[in-house]
Image (cartoon, rainbow, N blue to C red; front, side, top):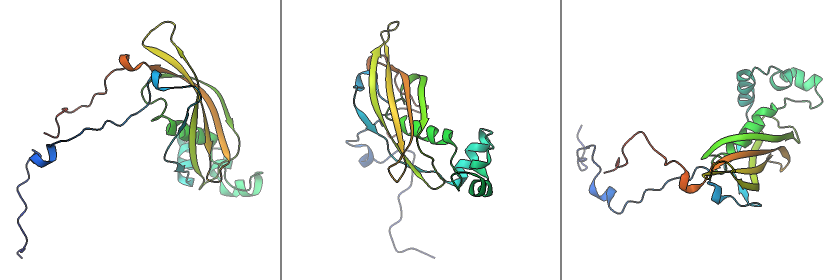
Length: 192
C-alpha cells in the first residue's frame, strides 16, 4: 500500500537548524535562596492532591500503621466517632510538606526541625488537599556566612475550605552566591 503524501525526511540525532535558532533554555525554579524569603510572604502551592482510599492504604502499609480507622471500612462505620475511614494524619502532613518543597525547601541544605504539627480536622478518602506557606522569619547563620535559617508555617486545606493540618518548620537555606550549580548527567548542548 502506498501513500500519496510526501515522504518524511530521514531522522538523525541532530536537531534541524530551525529548532535551535533563537532558542531559550528555561530553568524551573525549585526552592528559594535565603535572599528570596521575606517575613510575611505567603507562598501558595499548586497543584492540590485528591487522596484516594488506595493512597491511604498504601501509606498505612508502608509505614506499618494498621489502625482499622484508616484501613477497615466496617470498623470506621460502626465503631468510630467519624462514621467512615479517616486518612492517616502523617499522609496529610507529608502531602502538604511535599507540596511546599518546590516553593520553600527544594534547594535547601537541610530541614532542621518541625516545631509543631497539628491536625485541625479529619481528612477522608476523596478529599482534595491544598497548601500554602507563610514565611515567619529568617536569620543568617552565625557560623557560616553562606547560609541562613528560614522559619515557615504551612496550612493544608480540603476542598471545603476547612483547615486540616498546620505545621511550623525551620530549613537551612543557601545564600544565592554560595549555592551549588544545578547539574545534569548529560551534556548541556543536548539540543545542538
